Length: 327
Image 1 (tube, rainbow, N blue to C red):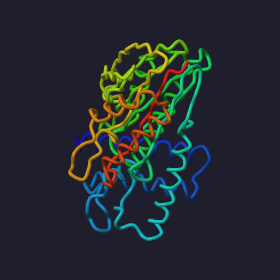
Image 2: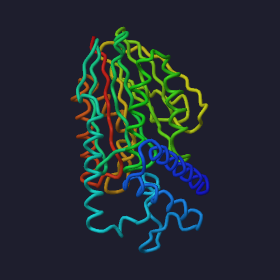
Image 3: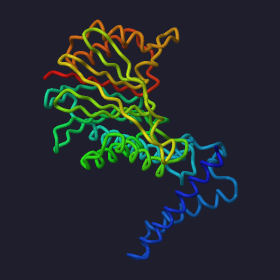
Image 4: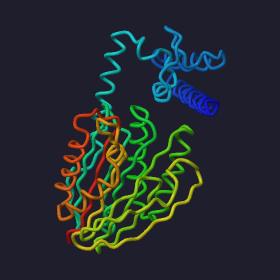
């Protein structure tokens, strides 16, 4: 697998060099372009020498996430100068603000549907994906919730890529499975082999009919008159194979029914004894609070999770979304 990753990173560096050369040809070489070209050439030289991925200061491996997000990195986090550390912190804070700007409205209502969610990064940025889009053509509400493999900056970059892809594909009016298949192919072709995303994509129309494509994600929970039913995955995560096909399931939500989607930052949270929160506890909570609207229901989930973890540190990003039929 390491050889596959090295090959992919080399391909990224060569492509980056080609683009820099094109930029030089179009508007002559500038000091900035010259510096960028030198960084890429130095990284390729380190690959040829067998020293790529080692810190030039302490000779220990550079953090894998740092290499993936910045293939020309040559110093580990611990060896950054104070000035470089401040610059990195400022970049992360800017990335967090940009990511927050990609999120939809916290409480949403349209054509008989109400949606609310909670989105919380374990660090400054998150690899969870969450979005709500109304199709102007027919009034359908598209909802997406997913989890990119890995954590931190690299995962957050891929999260923004998913956001852009679905925002571009949804207005085309394609069948739901075709939207997911195209997104999966684009994701596979543009990321490293180690990266993929589990994902639930749904389409709710004004009549109460809901179509769901679950690409390897945790089962959404359908709450109907106090009963909770799981909607299992129908395919592998997006980005695993470039030619992967997906299928969808169809459901009818009655007035008062709710769908709850979540990432493993909820179900796999641990208490002080190392016990997982688990889907069983979540289902019991939903049965107890089945009459609540999405906002209060999400808050009930968060309160119960906080009581369960009792202050234990969060190890993963957390996203919870509730979609309720109200019309």
